[in-house]
Length: 167
Image (cartoon, rainbow, N blue to C red):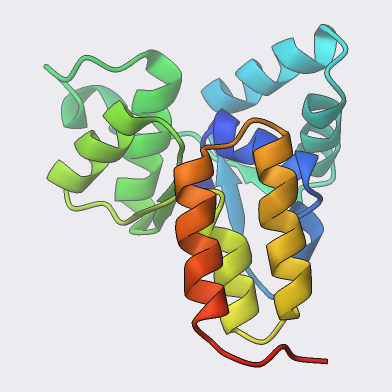
């Protein structure tokens, strides 16, 4: 189970990983506040936001409101959408996917496990649900979309440590 913030959802949509995550049994969650950010992007004509919106509409990404948002993140300087997704990850004891460093650090301090977009293709690869060359191509594609090169390089190094290519 993974709680998605908008940045991670957008990158996953851009590289086409949402269907693969669902195919291997990952449950994807989002709060209404994150969904609203996505709807605003779709309203502005962003293709990736429209893709995510379709996943929400089809209930492939489950929209769940966080119940105790205000009490958990009181005193922490987070925007409402970030506070909501952090709280949802806490409530569901699930992984939080985010690219936001402040949100990552806050999540860590509260004991929430975090991931980022580049780690997810690597995870799919290690679960033998994707071939090495596919994973490397997705990481290259993430870079082309402006994703953090340092993170993708680290993931590529991990993949290449594995030795021979799989056919």
